[in-house]
Image 1 (tube, rainbow, N blue to C red):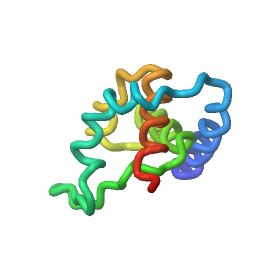
Image 2 (tube, rainbow, N blue to C red):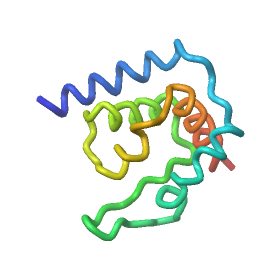
Image 3 (tube, one colour):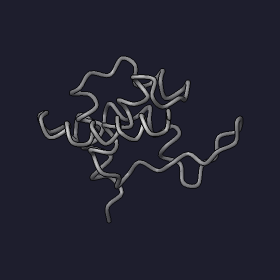
Length: 106
């Protein structure tokens, strides 16, 4: 049931992103430096618990915003991600998403 609710929340967030102003990729590049500590390392695996850390560059902005909102709202559970997104504003999320969406596209 929780998985279904999470999926519906993420889907809803993806469609609601359209209502907000576009993000600023240059501002996102500055704000995203902390993110690169894990998400910017090729083939990075977290030590404990062991899992592959996903690359954010090239992901769709709507997906990234929905994921950040899900972590912030407690629908996705990850202590480190929660700590990193809990104080982000809507504009911060838009800026980060704009940066990572365009980053990594060769």
